[in-house]
Length: 68
Ligand code: 9UX
Image (cartoon, rainbow, N blue to C red):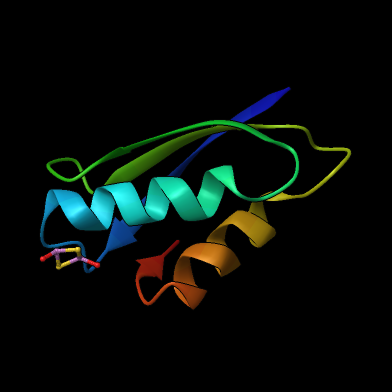
C-alpha cells in the first residue's frame, strides 16, 4: 500500500470534503482517504497495482476541484 498527499483547491465547506472522500473511496484500489478542509489536503492510501497518483488527482479534478 502506498500513501500520498494531494493538495486540493476549491473546497468551501465540509460537504466538499465528504464529496471528495466519496469520489476517492469509490475508486478501486483506494483503501482510505482523509480530506482536510483547513489544510486543503488529502491523505490517501492506495494499492499501486490498481491505480496511480495521477488517477487520484484526475478524479478530484473531474469532481470540479483543483488538485496537484
Ligand atoms: Mo459545500 Mo462543496 O455548500 O462541493 S459541498 S460548496
